[in-house]
Picture 1 (tube, rainbow, N blue to C red):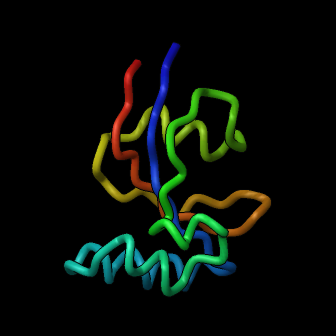
Picture 2: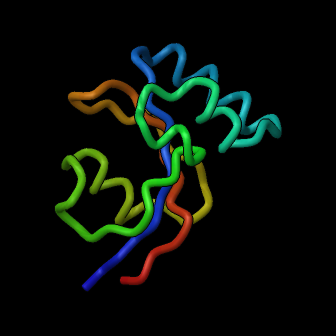
Picture 3: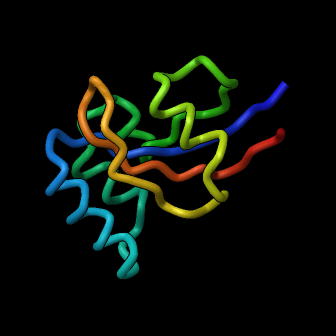
Length: 93
C-alpha cells in the first residue's frame, strides 16, 4: 500500500498562500514559514503531517500528495479548510 510523508502550510486566502510560496521559492525555510503563518496545529512541527496512506486526508490533498514530485512545493491547493502549500517529503508507491 502507498504511503507518503508530507508537510503543509494552511492559510485562509489564496493571496497569502501565493505570497508564502514565493518566499519559500526565494529561499525561506518551509518549517519556519509554517510555524509563523500556518493555522493548522501541525505548524508547531513545521507543518509536518507524518506518514499516511491514500484516503486519510481530504481528496484535494490526497490527489496532490500521491501524484506530485517529491520535495517540490505545490499549491495553492484549496480545500474546505482553506489554502494549502504542500510538500511531499517521501513516498512509497
